[in-house]
Length: 147
Image (cartoon, rainbow, N blue to C red; front, side, top):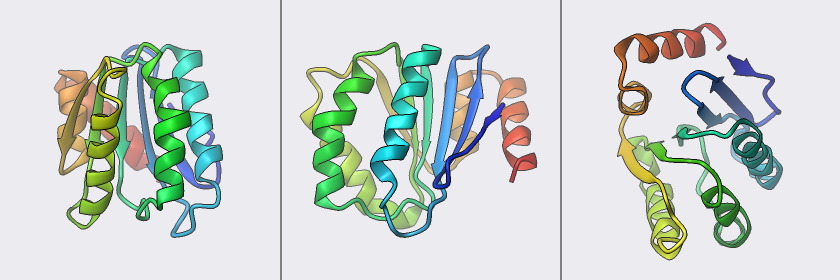
């Protein structure tokens, strides 16, 4: 199901797969970044999320301020929960943010208990997370119909 989105995030949740998918849709300013990320952390905690798809399409480059906040405050919150797999969709133009994610994973390797893979498109990421063409196609159709 597509969850009620806050103004800068689009979020999809599948209860049967314990899967959460999200994409930034707030445009260039990151003024709501911390609020949005806290919302996601609450969803992970509340729904015992095991699989996460992070779609970096549309996400502006993260400033040092956001990077420090994610590394110190947000990432440890997520790492302490039930997440087992994280698929990160990185568009060709988001090399900087991919390096940011890789740096944060490197710094937090001692608390990271989940497998992380990078993908060029959401369908490949969902295929890996769901391990089921039927689930993958259903999730893609739901996402498309909600846009």
